[in-house]
Amino acid sequence: MKKLIILIEIILLASCAVDTPTSVQNTTTDIAFVLAEGAYPNNNGSLWSISNGTISEVTGNPTGNTANSIAVHGNNLYVINNGSANLVVYSVSHEGIVEPTGTVIDLDGSQPREILIINYKAYISQWNKHSIAIVDLTTLTIEQIEMPGCSEGLTTDGTFLYATIKYLNNTDWPYPTGNTVEKINLSTNLIEKSFTVSNNPDMAFYHNGYVYVGSQYGDWPTFNYITEKIDPETGELVSSKDHGSEVVFGTDFSIHDNVLYRAYDKGIVSLNDDLSINMSTYIGTEYSNLYSMAINEDYIYLGFGDYTAPDNVIVLDFDGNEISNFEVGASPGSFAFWKSE
Image (cartoon, rainbow, N blue to C red; front, side, top):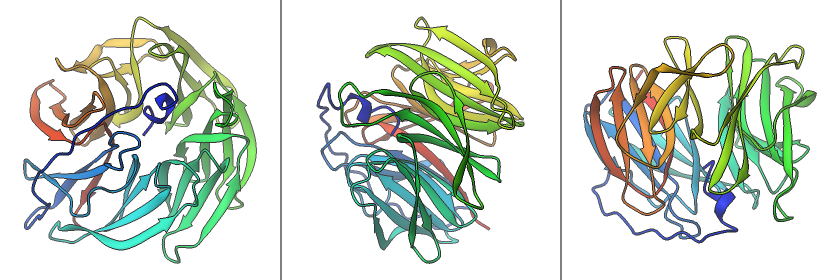
């Protein structure tokens, strides 16, 4: 979800329902999933599937209260609902038919944030429990890794899990800021190192031997945006760039042709070695209120939202051409991609 919950102490957001057909895919081999958060606390998070150039609302909506994060693993799809504090499991058939399995895992009011799946285990950052939940996707049992605050973004190099600590707690308002990235050994589930970064770190992304972190500071709706690059072996802060408030970054990172992009303005942009903006790589749209970003193969998926339905997902190619424009539920905040095996 990334953005919405941070604002709930300030504003209440309204949303209206969208009535579209249920998803039934007969011949598809590729599906792009869009998870729309909905408007807190209206219990109208929604899941959408894009295939063969069309979009459909998946059976089982609403997913829950504030649909926050999504991940694909094999022929299953996993949806995290922040407000409902649960993990909902969907199946995807070889024909591309998407439907809920009936499995809903209670996360005990933990206010879950992001999900990352590694080796048949789902790692879920949590605010209320100050922990990361580990859900074994075979047995559906849950373990906890204690964290020094409200964990947020997750990334991995395959051996270690890296988790940002956005706040020290979420009970005192304004929330006291966190400023670390925790390095967790996936074999022992123990924190091995803690790296100091700027305040309020959001998403983290591992790329080419480094951990990249996006942060922001200031008072809503005006923030200064920071990108930082960490050597995970030493904990050294290799580069740090305060981009100021004149530009607006999103929290999402993604890769194309081994180049790291960050959500920026109305599209995406890559960064130079010193983390300054490389405007020659900017690809964008005419739309406002960029909310999320993901890259799948040669296509860019951009979620735009004003917190009320319908909102839009725009698909671009890397020449900047608009391939598709889809209406979805309120606040499309997360993407996942499935391919038939």
